[in-house]
Image (cartoon, rainbow over all chains, first blue to last red; front, side, top):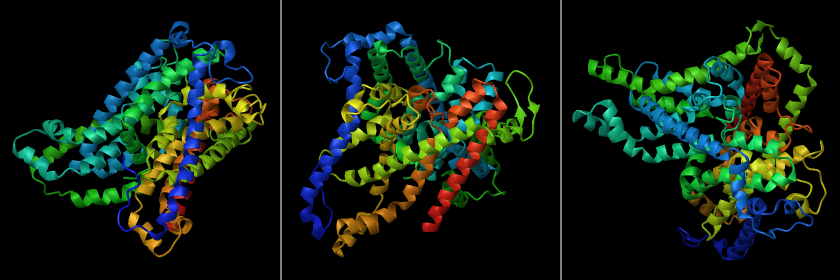
Length: 289
Length: 304
């Protein structure tokens, strides 16, 4: 990354700037470090002996570095199970969303059938209705289907998203119709065109969607608490909250910190690696191109 | 949000493809295949979004406990709620949470965005520090903040105070708001930064050439142009705020005046098995969110 790049003629006030800019930068950096200190504190607490975490006066560093604390969640709770469940549910929900949203986005963008605009409007209208409004009857439905405490209950109701369909439709709108016509003249069927022409060119929005859905799902707490609250089906948020409720004494704090850090690590790493896609996904939820 | 996007979209779709009745047969067959592509998503929406949406209105008029048949009670659920102190308190707790968390979070995000909207070396790293909490899950973060907010935790030790953050009716709601500001600032920062990048550079430069100092440029160029985004951000903030659940569950379990409306719905439906009454709260929440969104979008249209 280069230093300040100025396009065009420099405005007159540019000259005074550097000092002020540096001061602002130092303030922003200090604030950022305050934000990050929470993670550092959690990480250091995770490797402390239990009686040191709440010592007063506080010491940042442990006297003994107990790296073994990171295995405690796996020994004292079915943490591996929670991890596996979150991974299975997250991957399944993500794949299903990419498939259903791409299909629907393609349909709403490139075909003309009666009622298309109305259907798309109805899909968009559901954006106005958060899970928090509908989860009581949704739970009743899933209960009637016999899906309480099952992976079906955790996965199927989240298998598509209005935001994803909107995003895919907008992106596919940008594909020239001539491209599809050319493939049709070559005799390709619609499914083949979707797979060989549309999907490869939509790799970028599909990736942004996948990342967004996976991260949202990893964070999901309320719904899994309702339909997956036995030991077999608990995902990380549900399992973590249950562990917290069982470990309110200070003895369990290093283990809880280790568990929390292990739970947030995958999405944090994904974010660090795919930062631009992540930012893209969030800005699109606000409707900024 | 959805509604503002739709109008131009529909117009564009209609222009691109006039629904011609005189389409040839092959064309109609192809479009039928297109409809099939939308069916998986549409079926899922019908079952898991639209049906529950209609049903929540219906159930709000019934007494229902999941196992026996619903009993019609008319508006009794609503009548009960408006006289129920616990419901009114949860409404208050949610309003407090929305205002005290999202007011500071949005303001802080705006200030940070103005500062971080540079190509200065190192600003990418500083951004990461603020973004990181957004990429983590609420429950994990709340578990960490439980420790930070202990009487001998990081916050009290840093401020040199002795506040019972999580076990006092005075402080618990502030404690949750502090944790939530930390978690949410980055989200709005990302949106404001994107908004700032959409502002044409030449406008700033033209103002500078006319002799406007940086404060005047901020006041008369940048902030007015950020107004539409700010309204979208405020709508999102209110909706996010009313959805809050995890920090209250993990940090206080809803005690000490932190039982927000969503937690109240959860407890009413699943601890007391009063699905009808919980649905009535959900209906009220939906109406509230709709009104807030409408009012904010109207404010945007009037000022634009």
